[in-house]
Image 1 (cartoon, rainbow, N blue to C red):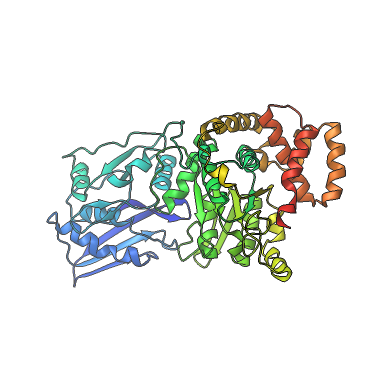
Image 2 (spheres, one colour):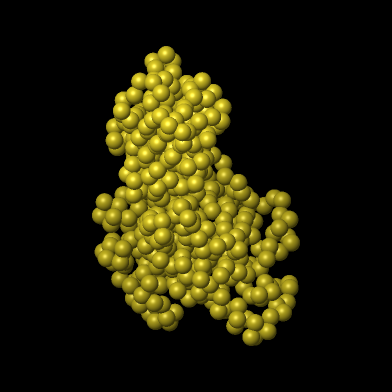
Length: 501
């Protein structure tokens, strides 16, 4: 009678159950694994055989391992452990266990190595009501999933002795990170001057608005973009689980706190690395930055096709990756931060260095700013060069720290979360057109002012909606119930595309 053991395989960020069936019959030695295994699964034959030999379990004859369902592609090394358990049961080293899920990669000496996908596996085990046996190295991730019965498996021998009821395995104890954030470096207190940019970044953090920083080299664009992570509110339980799923699916370590993701992408990155894909259809940077920041420094150096590929996920909050291996949908709700120089030489408008670009070069450089992409940016900010006196300032008025700014951002987000039941969005940037018109609370004076300025600035329908969302965030930061003309005026000031001219 063939032994039946449960394993898993990954499809995107979802764990799918795999039934591992094994059979050993007499005849010339052969070891075959069937059921659409990839190269890593097929190579498990040697790892499993060596690990069993360490326990004096020698397998001979014709060995067949079937991974069901047969039409589901299996990938990775996380099926090593269930295959070894199935063969050990077949050799009567231990009795067939009750229903459970096993995952882990085997070393040749029987140690169980960590694998990617522990969080999706824990969620699958919880939904099926089954215990999970996971590697010791994945225990920290599994401990972040509530309501799952899980056990740490340091070696194959420990697991088989547990199944023979000769040894106990340590349970994985739930251990969620605290809601308080650790200090984030760099801090906003390290940013000298740039009051306009600091205010714009605070608004961006409060409403999850996309922002463009334009300034000369060395003006502090990258420093402020990195400091933005420290003023974002901590991840909620649901958001934390969303980001944890994606990190686990690509094998990244579990986060130690509720800090939001921050992903900085180099301009030489490929479209697949940012949008996702590859032979195993993994998530890209736009999904790894979900609920956090995606920072594109030197924005004008990115390839045009890559920039255009980001338009849909930025608008919809998810991206569907279609490949021959299948179609997978990943979340991509990111706060996009773009940084660029004002011209090709970088010194246009600088008070010290003269610009060396010709009119033709300036026009060619402006074309690098994708119009449809800029229409998805809420805040345009000029970041001027600081004077030597500002850079060398040792005393003067103390600058606000990231923790102080974050306190205001959290209050503004709380006001937005309180409206979630009515508007169906966690932050103002996610407000639908219908809910935006209904819930914004625009005053009569603000409506008249916005109508006049929209014609002058030639705002598109999407641009006008983004101004309204930013104005709603400004009102939330001020604690105002309605949006007045001052909030609209500030939102329009950040929408002025003059920073690109």
